[in-house]
Length: 366
Image (cartoon, rainbow, N blue to C red; front, top):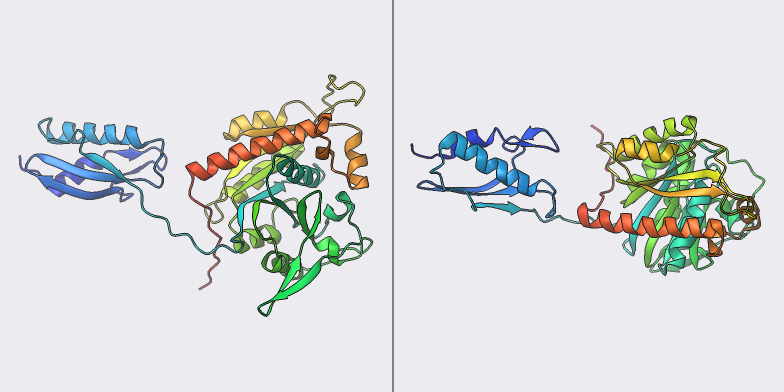
């Protein structure tokens, strides 16, 4: 039987990619197919060089060709891999290595507390860190850093105006709250809120950062869409309490980030208020909001649980006084947040090795 490209492709149509459940022929994964006598050579194209299906897909191709075209076909050892070069688009913040969005499905779960102390934990690990308070309707970063009433400065370079972030505890900070009076209600329509956020992103003089932490509003909405349009978010961290009413909204938040149009990987879940621990009895745990709710959900969704943060009396006091608890690395809360920061770094580094860079979302109209 004479070999032809048509016969080889027909045999390979039986090979299904596990991730998409489509034929490798339909996915156009077969590249540089060459037939010389009874010898067949080609390459399988993968999105990344360490795709977990590479070896199993090669074995499946060999099996399909030998079973359909005969074992005398020389195919073993003749299947290579091809990974196309990725063209990086110009980043909005070229000096920022990793952008981490801290989000929650609903309000009241301590998302801002986690974002603030995560930023401090990253700084404690030796990274250069910025924190953007993107919760435009309820900015809390000014109070949690003891900077109420403070105003960022501005500068002009080459005709461009820049907003210079404030800095405290070694972290660069910008928030809509720096530009309004603390007692004023934030009654903004969507375009006004997103316009202010765009200005903080595009005109913020962030400089070189290892991590820019974003404190997003709860839920899903215009601000979230603006964020993924304005910058390429490295990954998201979802914060929840163990309560079922909170966990129900976690799934919505995850779906928003991981959907086809946005495609931002979720680096992990954080269970806040996981248990109550009296400061004088640090070994005691009281599960007042339920036990292991986020852990169970993380296992169900196949997402890593990267932190469980307890409640202690000092957490409220520290937030009100503008001294994040993560600054005290020996306290119960400090240890929890610094461990969270360490796990986030590991998750981010793994994400950057295993996955292609996130692209900014492009909205097109017809």
